[in-house]
Image (cartoon, rainbow, N blue to C red; front, side, top):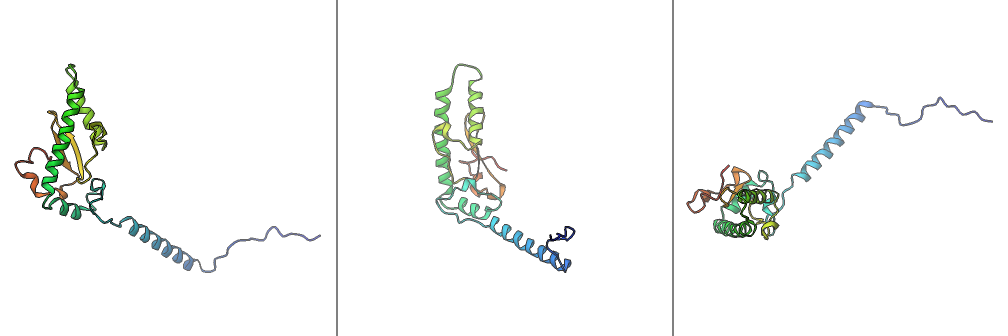
Length: 167
């Protein structure tokens, strides 16, 4: 019967450890660079893009360009009007004689709008605007852009002034 030597070491032997670690380091750096390049890739913005979901810092140039466009202010006024109409209808339909009814409705609306749930007012969220919609204590809809760098110049106009909260 043949004896098996159990003391024999098996496995991979590295002859030049410095060269091996240099190879592993370079390989890891290449993988990290590829991951960063893929993660930082920008998408093309067109009419079907949900601009409300974009990172405001990453896309600030593109967003500001869209918001400074010739019909952006009119679009904002129309969206504010539509949301205000739906908010007003919701308040009318859900108000009671309870003294806290109005403030409770405003709180409920703000929670739902903050979570981007516009179903409570029976409409779809406007996807053109990057920021948050709120209802103030008087029941008026307001909007705050996600970042100061994407605020268009027309937010200081008289017909918009009370509707936008500046950063």
